[in-house]
Image (cartoon, rainbow, N blue to C red):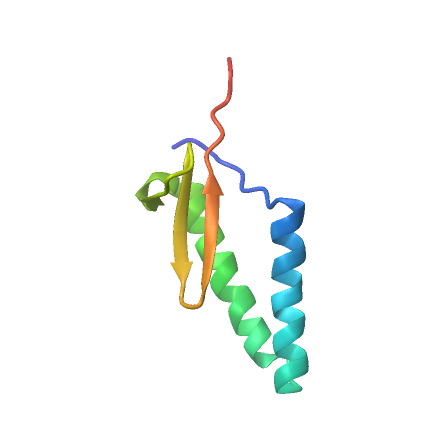
Length: 81
């Protein structure tokens, strides 16, 4: 099996942190943000293993996976030899 790396764009990382912070402030607790963090970490591992199982988009080499109210867009980068 090919080992793949998942790299977050700067924009995605900023949005993700913003979402986690929003829920901490809204709920006055970090419990939901911790739960969401675990869900995203699990899905990220799944993406690294099998990125082609996710739904294709209209964008070239891009797929998407849904996490309830959130989506993760996956840009497939092919290595050049």
